[in-house]
Image 1 (cartoon, rainbow over the protein chains, first blue to last red):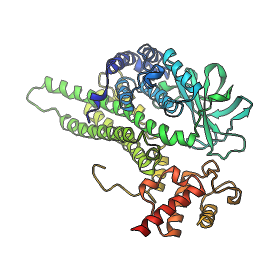
Image 2: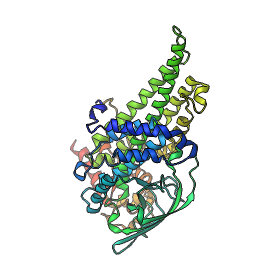
Image 3: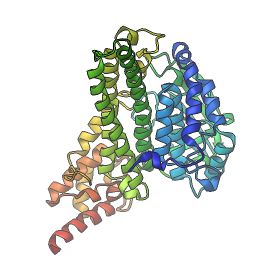
Image 4: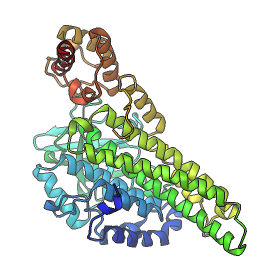
Length: 393
Length: 83
């Protein structure tokens, strides 16, 4: 299937490219200063990219995961932090779209996301449990129609800039750590007291500071499904696929820069194949592998989407885990190849061939839901799940 | 069959509560069954009933309660007897 043929009208690709052009202008400053890419995010809002996933009936464009991943890749080619913010927003939105339809409050909320182009943030990480997002220590307190929550959230990406935060907790005071719910809190319903500073190797513009989160809101803002189902049926898959779209975009831009370097060398010395040309050929083969992997994952998700028993099956979870593992590992070797091609011009900042930001941003991929955690989860499943023995199935 | 499942759940489920407090229809995930423990339970059940779970039954629903596990096991055993 040609994914591009699925990108429907309304010029989604063109709109994404316009935003990417804005992101490109500020990407180095965002990285250097570790600041929020407010120009790119403002451009996303004016291109109305934050509501595209919302169904047409609720005012959105009903964009598919394939279309959203394409936008992730286009943005990531210029500014990985901006692309990651866009991806994380849509991962949160996928939980609303998949599990909030038919619920009055959440439908009205989705309508508002489109109308006001609200940016959604996420708070799944907690002091004491680390990145194991299927566990919570904090519990939501329900009193009549009101809920209250306090969470030591060690990471909330763009917490200060988000317009609403979707946050996990245990479903009540006595609940087991895995009995979780996810609740939407709007900006005027919570306070954030900063506890950690996001000063990192890469993805610096996501401003993923830590906060003590305190909130109070009407009870109807709890998503009407257990978080276990939300995680299995929408969140983990969209995470792995949209992140992979971002990572592919980073690697693609690194190879594009390496190609420009090789072409410049070829032009300045006609008749001689530049020394980096062979490596470039090798890098494009690896890049192609990443692309095929991401597309296969997206197709698997689109096929499974209508069937909750498939979405919560082990075979599907193993497939999505594998997409994440392969993409996050492979981009590092591709960017390293690109660095070998560009040499010192790639290593230096401020040249048309600079790759330092790409390499640093790409290193986050193995750590966002740690590959070790994902591998051990897959390893557990492989004790009962049997591998598919067909090529096409 | 449910007694055997209960026994295995108590041994392998790693639940924070006693299995005796759970009804046959109780949601095991809400009771604290982790994905790791659910796989240990699946392995234990495969061994105890001498069956293999086919992939289409390896999902959350099949192991959501003691009743659901019993139905899942029964469907495999019946399928084998019919074959």
